[in-house]
Amino acid sequence: MTNPYLLDVRGLHKSFGHTEVLAGIDFQVAERELVFVIGPSGSGKSTLLRCCNLLEEPTSGTVTVDGVDLTAPGVDINKMRQRIGMVFQSFNLYPHMTASGNVTLALRKVLKQGRAEAAETALAALERVGMADKAEAFPNELSGGQQQRVAIARALALEPKIMLFDEPTSALDPELVGSVLKVMQDMRESGMTMVVVSHEMQFARAAADRVTFIDGGLIVEEGPPEQMFSNPTFPRTREFLARVAHA
Amino acid sequence: MDILVENFFNLAIMQSALPTVLTGFGMTLLLVAVVVPVGFAGGLLVALVSGARSRLLRWPMIAYVDFFRAFPPLVLLIFIHAGLPFAGIDLPAFAAVTLAFFLNTSCYYGEILRAGIESIGKGQMEAARSTGLTKLLAMTNVILPQAVRNVLPDLISNTLEVVKLTSIASVVALPELLYSAEMARSISYNASPIILAAGLYLLLLWPVVRLLSRLEHRLAA
Image 1: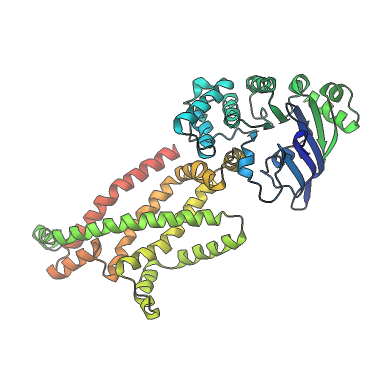
Image 2: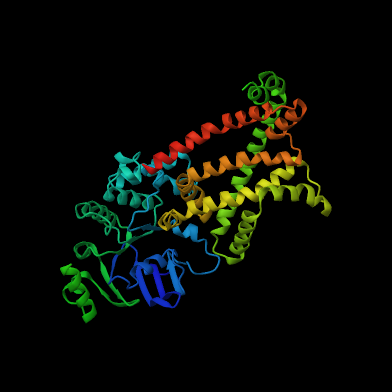
């Protein structure tokens, strides 16, 4: 039996010490879907995302990506992570490497591509995010928006099946946000499956297939953006959206 | 004044001692070429294991580092060279020195490297792991290059100390620079060979001291 979902999270619990951050999450994402995860800070949305590539080890529950249960014993997590791209709030580019070097590292060390081949793949990935002309620049020579686009290229170059975005624009100056969202919009149009934790509600409204609201480690409700933003079922969702709208 | 020159800066004596002292200098260089990389490699191992998640690995490493940092290197060397034979372990002088330096300097290099690794934000490791790199690959390609750069002055400063410390090899009759100069002094009954040796140490280390000072200035700026 094949799993109809590219990402299938079942009964996910995660505790840090005695604090339960995720209290039983069931969360599915189909191929080519863009799902927005929203919620107040501390609600567990980032932890959920980080459990999807096992940067955080779930306390219990399963995380199935592309038909493989990541929590099963004997799973080659490094191999699976090639299929799961991740973009971080603080970019996390390697400061001692050029943009191209950032992208080629995994191509060479993980995919075992030769130097020339990796450079070519990297350039193509940087091209997709509009950063090909900065391939030889170091991260500290780039703006935040440019750094984040290089970070996206670094994940894209491995041709992942799904991309996870952990507040990709939260660390950016407002005028730089657009360039990153534009890249994400392009990715969506090319059919990439994406899970986005973010407060960019306008972008959610325009691009998301589904919005998932998390609070207190549980999914409160989810639905298409029109419904979630104009007519949420639960008062908690309404309160949160009102607060974000006025922020 | 004449007595001073006669006893300390006697060119004739320096000249006759020069071959012996230079041979000793060669041995010192060889010693440095062995104990510095060996100590650094040991330090790398110490740093990596100290950062391990398993207590079973971490705790013995903490004990090891504590023990050998508190153990005077000269006592350690004499114990290895003159004490261990009582247990049937009789190491040649060079091996004894190498072992003593490995035990001592790997702790210091290890502590410096550990501080360097800890200075790198955990986002770097996460980014690398998220692209499928193993922990080891992420360490060697992403974390260590940045860590070493961050603690470079401390690493060089420690290396300086290690080079100077090689003179303790003289107590186990390894004919390095100090030992050779001391031989020449006792034969000539004149302090000039010691001055000659000091000059050679200075020649070797002064450029390193300069480099270190410039690095520290650049990092402070």
